[in-house]
Image (tube, rainbow, N blue to C red; front, top):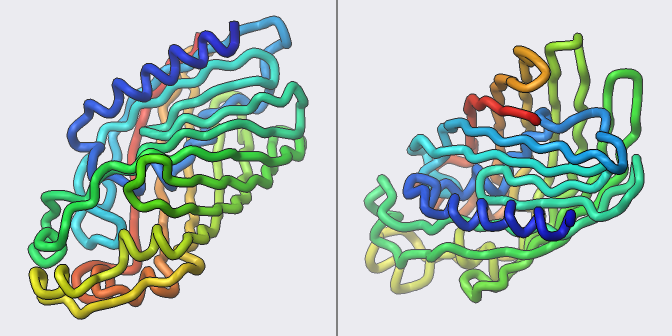
Length: 280
């Protein structure tokens, strides 16, 4: 039954692809994990719990852009005991380990295309189509008094032949209840990216250089970025919640040195938004 209902949630992720403004919002699905909306206490092993939500976020026009756009933020979660699947923007992640502390499960992420962006130089480069990435996420949750400290690692690899690369992201997350109605989240992460990923999104070949006026650049593998996120939720009642979040991402190494970022964009990236959820 859990697998069947997870498939329904996956169908919702596919429907979310129809949101046109989310197509270029790469950072939203790839880097924002709104675990502040998670339940600190899991339901009983035989109890189902559901959450649906919607929000809006301001995100970079492309990874490394200094221009921003609004993007829709679909949210959903299905949980039974310690098992769950959750949708955040265009990322579907899960835990298939029936344990109160250990987590391990598959991840599906859709990384938006880079096409028709505001910057004329980057827009003159060849388009990058939507990429579909599959991977796994695992971690350990330290259950504290009214709080959860989580250590996790996520690995994603392209399965759509778009960038043919992979990304490895270790995270530390602290989720705490300040009161019966207010919860807060702090999260930090690093992302390591492969040669293929870096070259696709930050490289500038001779053709792109001729079309855009940017210098040629070969992007190598390395630490792509460091992120810090903060969020808070307010529970109106047992069902309805409202939240706000913000994320700062600093592009590093070849990502920041790329002319796509250094000349045409910005190494400092910001994401912020609001959302509401309904739990039943």
